[in-house]
Image 1 (cartoon, rainbow, N blue to C red):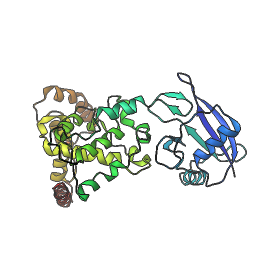
Image 2 (image 1 turned 120 degrees about the vertical axis):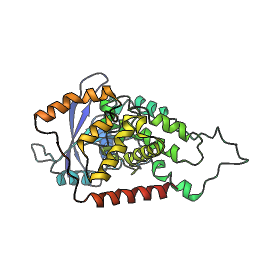
Image 3 (image 1 turned 180 degrees about the vertical axis):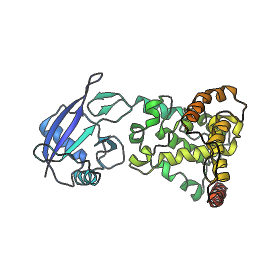
Image 4 (image 1 turned 135 degrees about the vertical axis):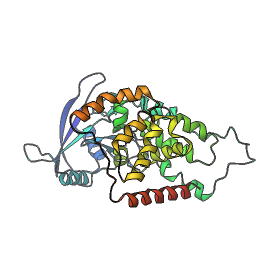
Length: 336
């Protein structure tokens, strides 16, 4: 079958251009196979990263038809089928299917599909991704773990640092201080590691403003593109829970936001917006600056009839409450 590959090419500090390459391919050919053929047979100047070709090293991550993925994992047939299912398949003038290849996002382009991953690695370094045993007595041979303790590290240990999640991270795009889903997924590995002696210090660091876990917008893109099922958002959520277990509502707005939301839903089945703003932003009338900050919004809502003057609990409030309490009890049991 013939496929038209549209490659987004770019030199450093220059505008991107689209270059097309027509290939005769088999459905089972990977995107990396096709890029290799373009480079070997049509254009030796095309630049991209590759190494293992077996979804182990993460080198060949790039955007394939708008989503970050490994070029060695995705093949032509499955990619065309995915686009057809989503009704996104584009054809050229000769009715030839098109596949668009672009560099990863959130990282400056060096050349073509090669990006500068300095921020990616610097943000990983910022969370201190190494087990610390400084506060523990060094054993005669090694720090031992039970099979159960080790199994808790399996999912995060699968991360190959390909950069796909970082490429799709909306939070980093609007907030460069956010360390990124890859770093926080690795951070949870340190928190969960029974050999580490810096858990409390780590949690305080991951709790800082919007640099750490509270900077995540929970868009789920990181989970959807991760080729190794690390589920970075799930790991971020686990860190949040560890922090929430140690903090009070008065400690920060981020903590109040989570705790108040759960309390209001337990109480009424859904959120009472009147109480939510006052308790979270206004800190129960203790934060005058916060209260004054939401007054303009409140007045606009009242003027447009969008401010609820009363609150009616959900008919299923009792069922919602029992579900939340059951989940909370289960979480306590898992942690214990």
